[in-house]
Structures are given as structure tokens and as C-alpha cells.
Length: 235
Image (cartoon, rainbow, N blue to C red; front, top):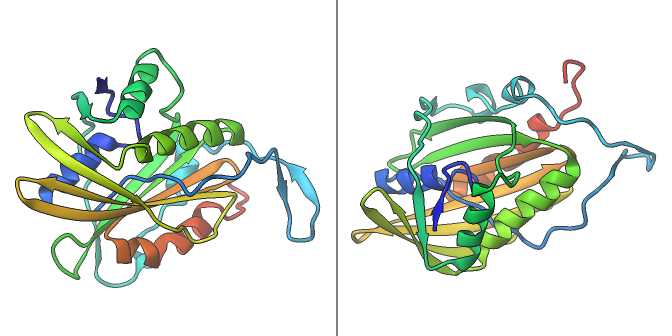
């Protein structure tokens, strides 16, 4: 089954990054809680759920070099990849691909992303993706994507003529936001291996996805969530 590139949170891009030796990853969940329909303030009072943010508003909430500290360099965004990616050996991902092909809402309309390399050595990279939609749609769609990606401990991704082996392992996620997911993926190609981590956190109508080398993901996920979900008048 061929999957559109936008399905499963940039699966194609992850495969390409694995081939080039950069560290990034793809997430899957610790079991999410029920979707929230209201937000709760620290004093216990509830308020209506906020509206989704635009892509322009999300872009202003991405991490930048000043947030990360010394040694980080922003990397140019790769051109959009339109080639199909074939997943072999994971029926749940194949089913997800067929649903996407008939227009199921798996690609959120509001998004922003950025990536950085770190001077710590080859393969030291971290990337951030922000998505926004209604709370219910984020809960249903993101949860379904991540469940599919962890339903198969091992599978293959065929991008172009290259087959990449993928091994997945759920790991505990820091308690942030309303829901959170975290996963280690090992990509193997021709004897080369790359271990990547992805942690995703949903707070209200925003999902923050941090991918990269495990130590960098752990170091920056809290500040990414704080910046992405901060209340701003410009919202």
C-alpha cells in the first residue's frame, strides 16, 4: 500500500533523514486520555476550548536559536516531497494510507515546522512541528496515526528504490499537556543504523512534535510546549 507523504506525520521525510544520518523520529503513544472539550485554568475554573491557530500564528511560536542556546544552526526546509512511500509489513499503516487516499482528515490544514543542527557532532539534530485543529479532531486523528505506527514493532519503508528497516519502541513521555506520546525508532539501511526519538504533546488545539536525537528532544520538549501554548494577545 502506498501512503501519501503527508500521512503519518512526515513518514517520508523521516525515512530520508534516516538515510542522510540526521536524527529525527516518528511518534507513537503512551495511551492518550479522553479528549477535552473545555480548558481548565489553574484556579479550577473552566472555559470554552480555544479556536485552532492559523499557520502564521503557529510559525511565531516555533523555537528559534535564542530558545535553544549556542551551537544550533537553523537548517533550510527541504522541498516538499510528493513521491509515494510504500510501507511493507504493517497492515495498520497500510489501512491508514488507504483511508487518507479517500480524503480522511489526517493532514491538518494549520501547521508550521523548523529544524536545527547542533554542533555536538554528526547526527545531532532536532526538529519541531506544530499542528492546530479542533481538540476533537486532533485527539481522534493524531491518536489513530500514532496507534497505527506502534501496532507493528518492525516494518519496512520503501522510498524510491531504497528499503529502510524500522523498529519501534514506546517510551515514557514527560507529563505535559492534555495528551502525550513518545517513541524511539531505529532506522537501518545497508548496515547503517540511526536511533531517533519523537515526542508529541497536545495542549488544547495545538500539537507540538519534537523529533531528533534523543538527548536533544528531552532537552527541549518542555520549552517547545511552553512557547507553543503560551497565551498571546496576537494568538
